[in-house]
Amino acid sequence: MIDGGRVTRLVGRRNVRPSRERVGGARQNMNFQRSATVLLVSDVAVSAAFYQRYLGFDVGFDMGWFASLKHPSGATLDLWLRSHDTVPAFLRRPVGGVVLAFVVEDANAEAAKMAAAGLRIAKALTDNPWGQRNFVVEDPDGVAIDIVQPIPPSPEFLREHGLA
Image (tube, rainbow, N blue to C red; front, side, top):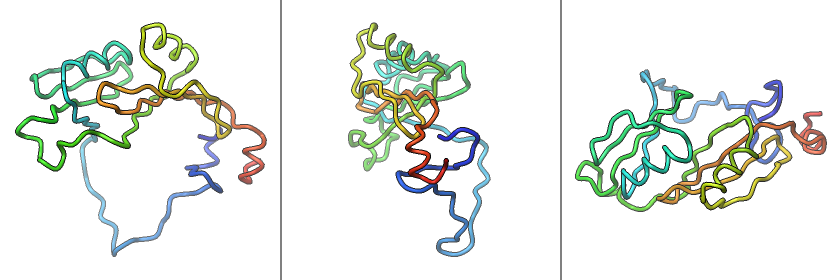
């Protein structure tokens, strides 16, 4: 995240902009109405309670094996019981490599609140040179929750990446 929108995306090297190249023929644009984040969980009630208590989500509806959560910001999150009959067999394994990122105004305050509530901070609050202050916690199924606050990037980072 760089101030002023000068960089569309940063991936650990020079500023990278989305490719306009076509891969495998003509680009097909899907016409979808909305997107959803769905987490397969071992216990819907436990996961729903976690997201309510620590992140402020509300339960929109709960069928026991599936729950839909909504945050006052408008973000939504669905929880689907991993062992339910409707979950394809290839999806029933434990999660790995999933990160949910939430951008906040004050990561220091959020880290203090979570620690005071007894939640283990998996990655300590850190100021990153590319313009993020963040910390990471884990949900009950091991999903990484990255709490991010935009901050100005360091002058060294900007020079190193040709952005100064």
